[in-house]
Image (cartoon, rainbow, N blue to C red; front, side, top):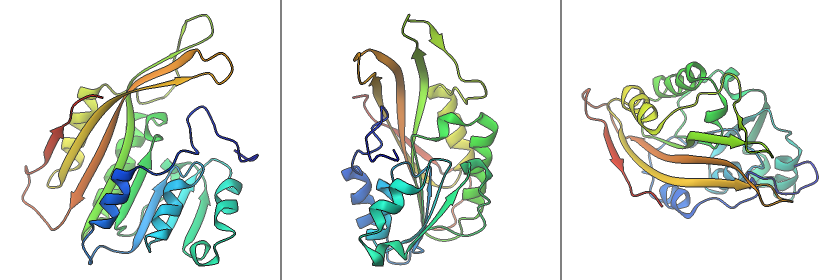
Length: 221
């Protein structure tokens, strides 16, 4: 990342068209503050700044690639505050109009994942959008085909993660799409990571009665 090269996780990939469409469709009264949890190479942080948000970008990854992308654009750089720390340690203390967590929550424990999302929901008191991409049903293998498990990782199944969303985002409108995801070693092209990725769009437009969360399950691609 420090050498401006891509990674096996494809952190240099552009922001999804779906996410850009969501930003374009936000109501005018959405707070213009955004939180990017796990900024990686900075694609979503930059997109949020370009959309007019002031952004807090949090990650333990090195900040240099993100700062390098921002440096030619002084107007964007002024809108971004970078916090180099573990995302589960970030104290969410304000109402962010947009919260993004892409391909990062699966590294946390279930307790830390759910505490982080709960804090973000508790601070939401206006029009809010949470955009999450979360890996479930993860399978990692080494060069010999043996399974690798990361100690403390959430290890959600699609079913258990769906239940977490129903509980935490009660009263929000939630849509949920699933797709199969694989990653290959750059040199050997061996598949070492497989998962089912959940793409979550949770929208809070106004206080709503409990029990109104809607989970829409899209087709697996």
